[in-house]
Image (cartoon, rainbow, N blue to C red):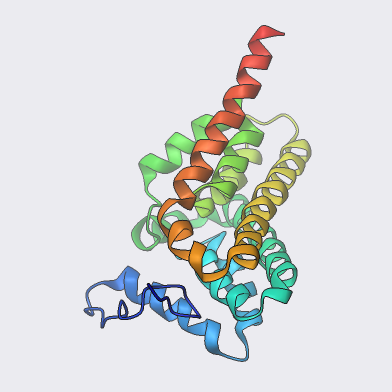
Length: 226
């Protein structure tokens, strides 16, 4: 079985997407940047935007870029990580400075996965899970933008006695989780090439979620046994 040397899809799998499949068209538009001279800049912008409002994860662009030049896998993973953490800070600032000014309605109406119910649920998790809720969203398929903006609203409220400490924990969790995800994806593409692309697209998010659950579960067990 042969695969496209750029995106790793099966040859013949590329089809015209109906106009009403908006999310898929955005996905394909994002993937198209991999074949342009400004691909590294696009990767930075995509990683930044995905942490605060854009619906397509940067892995979509990261994978074909590494496939196109495997020697640059560290560079691309670094770009992804730095931009994503910077975008997380931007998302935090949206929640801190703009949320109460009416921006909340804009996100609820136009950002996929961002609903009042999800926002309230995530806010309630910060009391007990602070670091882990950010880490989980940063490493797994949970929409990271929901976490970054919610952190800005919650972390600067009256219920948090030390916003500075909260923000520091937020940054540390974002750096570790985002870097772990992007360096892992880029590293796998560097080692295995196109053969592993279908596996990553199909199973990576589930494996990442399982790994995070086991990791958090281990710390919970240690906490209650200590």
